[in-house]
Length: 274
Image (cartoon, rainbow, N blue to C red; front, side, top):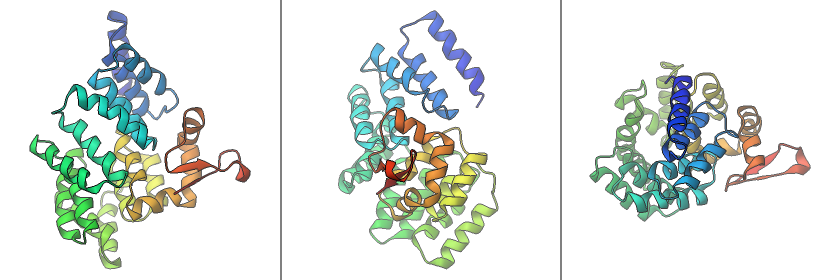
C-alpha cells in the first residue's frame, strides 16, 4: 500500500469537506499502519467527534484500541459500529474476538458463525481457536487456515494448517510448522505466525523487519487468552520490542493495555503483563 499517497488523498478529502468523519478515520488508520501510534489517536478521535455513530470511524477506532491491548474499550466502541450496521460481518468478527479475548467462548463462537453466515471468512479464526481449546486441533487447523487466508498472505491453506497444528501439537509438529515459516522468511505475516509457534523473539524481529502495514493483524494476536499469546507478552524480549516500536510511548500517553501495567520501580519504561 502506498501510504504516502493515501495520506495525501485523505488530506484532500478534508480540504473539500472538513466535516468528513471517514477522511479523519482514514488518517488515523494510515498513521496506525505507518506505526505512528501516538499520532493516530487525534484523527481517530476527531472522526468520532464529527459523527459519533459513523460505522467507519468507530470501527477504525476499535481497530486501534484492540491492537494496543485496550480490550474493554475496544468492545464499547465496536458496539457503536455494530448498532449502526448490525449486519456488518467485519464488525461482528471484531465483537466475536472481543468476547473470545474476555473469556466468553460461547458468545464468541455464536458471533463467529454469524460472521460466516454473512460471508465473512475471519470468523473461522475464532472457530479454530475454539476447536483447539476443546481438544480438536485438526478441526481447529482447518478453520484457522480458512480464516487466516483472508489476510492474503503468501502461505497456502495447507501451510497455515500445519502451522496451527504446530501451535497446539507436540514438538515434532511445532518443528514442522517452523519449517513452513522458514520457507517464507520475509512474508509480511511470518511474524504473526511465529507468535503461534511460541517464538516471540523471532516474531518481534520479523515484525520490525518485514512486518505488515495491517498492524492489527499482528498486535491483536498479542492479547489473546491462548498460551502462545501469553508467552509472547510475558517474554523478556517484549519489553524492549514494545519500547522500540512505539507501543510504550503510546501507552504512557494514553492508557496501558488491559493485561499490562507499568512497573516504574524497575525502570521508566518497564511493565509487566498477565
